[in-house]
Amino acid sequence: MSAILAIYQREMLILRKRFFRQLASIAISPLLYIVAFGFGMGRNLKVGGHSYMEFLIPGLVAMSSMTQAFAMSSEINIARFYWHVFEEFQAAPIGNLSYVSGEVLAGITRALFSVAVILLIAAASGVVLSYNFYFWLAVSLNAFVFSSLAVTLAMLVKSHSDQALLSNFFITPMAFLGGTFFPVNSMPPWVRYILHFLPLTHACKAIRAAAFAQPPLYSSYVLLAVLGAILFVLAFNCVNRARD
Image (cartoon, rainbow, N blue to C red; front, side, top):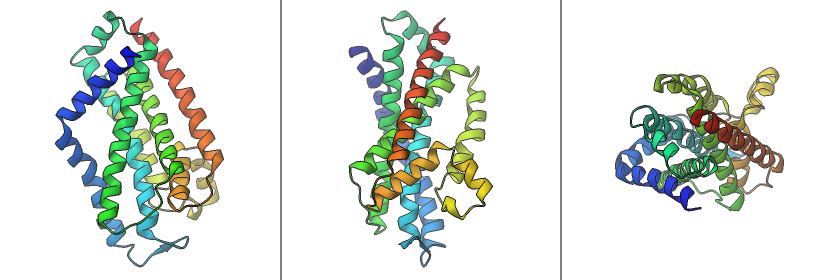
């Protein structure tokens, strides 16, 4: 447990050192989306009986928790390729499971921090939603999935530029096609079928249903939990290989 906390504390110290820059980075994108889409074109638009702003905020929560959790991959790669911190972890009495757990926990924390920022912006914009247990559970599971994916890919790539390429091919398309800005049901059937396999699609559905105080979508929670567990195990195996 102490090894996990050591890894986690290191990431939190880095976050604290960059707090104001990180805060500005997290806040600017949701603020632009809210102004451009929420106020600009969605003031009088209704989606499923809710205003477009109410529809947009849960989507931004899902997207931001995904991107901030996955951003751990960049932090790991910087430490691995430039600072050679991973080599120090190899020499230290820290098990691979502790390393993965600490990094994943740090990713989840970053995601929750980003969600808190978005909810403050939403409150300032006059949006009132239900932030209940199922809302935070969906956010945490979404962060768990993409934190585990971040550690996995960080161990597989050979350079920092490779990591940016993976983000452009996987994270960016998912951010715009996973139900963040528009209802997935409005897409053609064959597109809906493809989007159904994206974890962010299920995260958006679960977070939005909870925010609207609707019955929880248990299938989405189970899928995110199972996928997160699979990626966590995969991350552990990839760290084993990287250390070898």
